Length: 473
Ligand code: ADP
Ligand code: G6P
Image 1 (cartoon, rainbow, N blue to C red):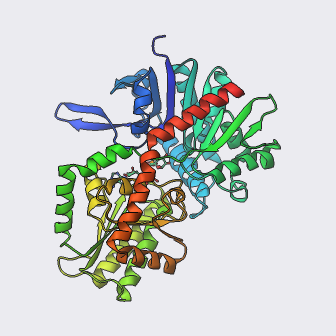
Image 2 (cartoon, protein in one colour):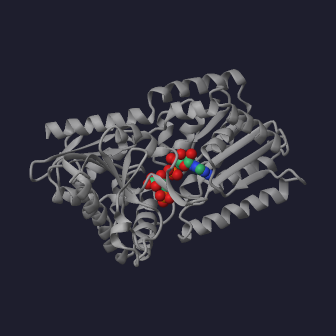
């Protein structure tokens, strides 16, 4: 089979978007994130990315067509079809209504439904089968994120010759919370199919190893646990990052500089632009951030038009009830603030429920004076890192929640506890009023850190560790 790959990435989403053109429609590489990180690794060898297109598969479509691999920018793409009912139970159900809230400190109540589990397992099996099919003898397979936690064990059962890594992009909860999860033992067993399980933070790896003791009666030692068959599974922290060089280059481009100036002008050249850029997700703390802004306006500590807020809230998981009600709450709060504090032609909050191009995002980052990243819990938060990388002018300040993984690295941000509204207020005011020299010093230190901790370094450190575990096991 000439379609076999020596390196395979398995992720719920494919790194491609279907784009409509004059000639019909075609696939394009989606910008940013994992695909940028892995592109050099993937395109340098015979590699395949296994994932879902994001659209419901058509039952009438020829099966073969729906799974036919194709090549894009040197990467082989192997689509995994997911049907409408499966999207509801595997993606919206078990992945995003059970696991997502549970793994994020249960900031919204997780919902558990028995019928979701079967579908989660069934779809995980489909991903595992696809990976087993495209992986060559002894290949390395890297499985990504919470949607696919059963894939490592399924893959190992089918293909014991493979080296298997798993990386969890979101937090891994403490023992007490994880214990709520129905089928918790199966989920742990699924992950233990990997040779190396990577997390964002050391505490996440610790929680995982503790749980293998608590739930499965294993005896973890140091950074690994031995299974009854003698195989060793390693766990460790590999904080993900962004393509720093790419963001710096984009942010320094004439186009971005001009667009940033235009954004400022369009906003009425205020003294202070406060920016938020998040997926519209209840973990991101958007509602509280707006409330804090309203209180600061009410107390007269900030005023319009000197200060305006721009909140970009990317549409996300819109069929799930908790996301719908979040949207209603956020939009109600925006309306309230603008009603009370806006002026004709000068809203206090510019709310944008839209996706933006990389160029526009970079321009917004450069136009901002204060970036607010205040999630209640976040595995990493790449927006915070993108903002810092974009500030090639060393200007601007960052207000960052202690509950984002990024806070462990971006120590010169104005750190805050998003559960303590007065504390966030203080941090925001300090970030607004800090002197230029202090702001520049903070930004310089954070930028220096990111230069040596970019996404390429992340991928390399994980894959090197995976390679080593394979040899010592
Ligand atoms: P999460 O993975 O939970 O969405 P992150 O902050 O880690 O949060 O990553 C979000 C990614 O999505 C970033 O790369 C960011 O640039 C991108 N993004 C966020 N909002 C938008 C938007 N409105 N348009 C385009 N990309 C966006
Ligand atoms: C987070 C998750 C990713 C997910 C992304 C977007 O970053 O860790 O696995 O792909 O959010 O969410 P979506 O549900 O649209 O894929």
